[in-house]
Each structure stands twice: as C-alpha cells, then as structure tokens.
Length: 171
Image 1: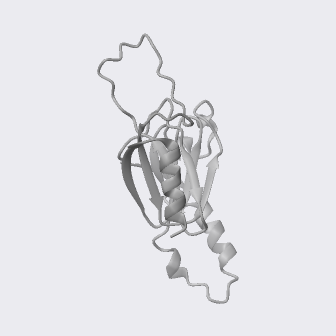
Image 2: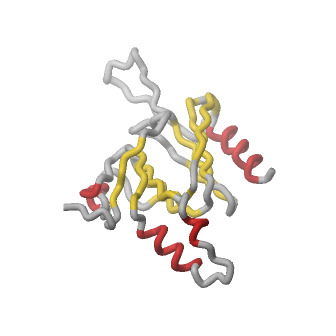
Image 3: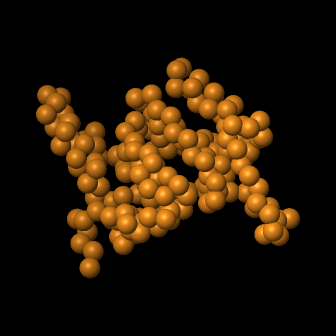
C-alpha cells in the first residue's frame, strides 16, 4: 500500500510526445532556466517496418523538434536508459518508460529546501509551487525542479534550434 507521504510518480500528459526510438534530448541551462530540445514523434504512414531511418543531430536535416523552457534552473540529466528503468526507485510507484511525470512528495525538493533553510532570508512559500518533473527518454532521464514549463515546436536542425536557445539564455 502506498502511503501518501511517500514519494511517488504521477504520469502527466505531455504534448508533443517525443520519438521513443531516437528522441535525442539536449539540455541547456544558464542558472535561471532549463531548456530542453527533443525530436518529436512523427508518424510515417509509408513506413512498412522493413527499414530504419537514421537520425543525426549533427546533420543539416530539418526535423520536427520541440523546445521546452522550464521555469527553474535545477536539473539532473542522464541517469539511466530504458534497459534499466525497472531499477529506478519509483518504478513500482507510478514511474513508466517514455513518459513525463510529476514526482509527488519529492525527496529531492525536500533535500533542496533543507539546504536553503540556512539562508537568513529563506521563505517556505517560495517552494510551494515548485514541482519535480521527470521525463524518461530512450537513453536518458531528465529531472527538473521548476514551477512550470512551456513547449514550442519547430521544423529545423538541432544546430539552429540550439543557437536559438543560446540567444534566449543571453537576452
């Protein structure tokens, strides 16, 4: 039985969904915001299963890409791939592969609050809207502490969208 004070994951709707085979997530941060680029899942009605399309983030090929801007700057990236997701501590507590989640009763948020409590101007209310997001990609996991996020979509190259992120981080 799951006690409601324990940490657990709740899957959230995430649009647009990333490609499950090769999402190729890239993460950027400047100490104020976290940005995420990933390849959007695109249905190919002509695909018959007899071939594989190679995706190369260094090519000049334009792909359907999502740019996510999180209103927060604390993140972890990498961690695990889909072959070991079942070893994650929250796997039996709501976490599922290739999905986005909110981690309820986050021990990571509690840990960060405890670190910040020593600050003379610490205010508990500043933490009330912070959420622990966990996005499980094919070969990586992104976790972010943020109050919110926005998603934009593009048809462009990874390089061009990365350049746009650098501009946004330095405005």
